[in-house]
Image (cartoon, protein in one colour):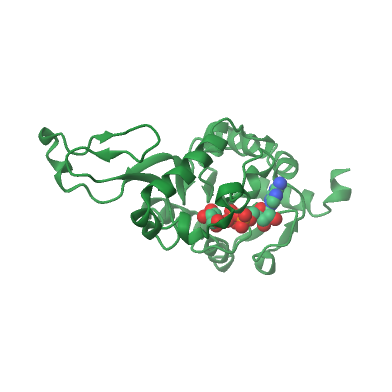
Length: 254
Ligand code: APR
């Protein structure tokens, strides 16, 4: 039945079996079947009138920290009880069965790959449940002054009581650099992989989408799993038009 729906799937599975190293890039689509609202989906109700630049940029946070904090507090609350789906579990189980064979890079900030038990996740866009200082805390190097310790009033962005520096969500906002170590490791995996699996991403946001181009240029087979067309379809050797929770357990079951 599977083969009838996805004629290319058995072939891709064989490529994966033959591959010494697999790279994988995931996006919001892998969490769709867990019910995680995408950035756009989350912009309902009160938030519908804001543009992305009002909610997910450093300038927006500096302008109105409370508003951005509230937006992230709501997204965190919506995500905290969400559970990984069969796609996340298939990837995690594969990584556990074959240590070091699959390098997983994700654009998702929901932590679901980690929750599923993936031993190593390159979180290219950060993690929504973590915080980081907005500015390098100048006094933080002098812990004897008590600087660099966050103090929070409920519902407000936490501040350093000494210097006033704010904590912000540790996600990559529009216009920001990706974490250098994670990006470098993902690029290295794209360079050396035999197969690059691109799952649940529209392939429109760079530099993450560039990993697929890089893998293709380096000679890897590029495979897309996405029920809808993506911007990377043109460079893919195969497009499997199914959902990640359906397709990944069948591709990664060895
Ligand atoms: N299985 C696989 N793919 C799916 C599924 C599913 N069940 N449901 C939807 N998709 C696909 C859609 O067809 C779409 O191509 O997931 C993709 C989601 O695209 P986007 O919402 O644009 O998410 P993504 O590509 O991850 O966005 C990248 O952009 O919004 C910023 O920083 C944010 O990390 C995000 C980045």
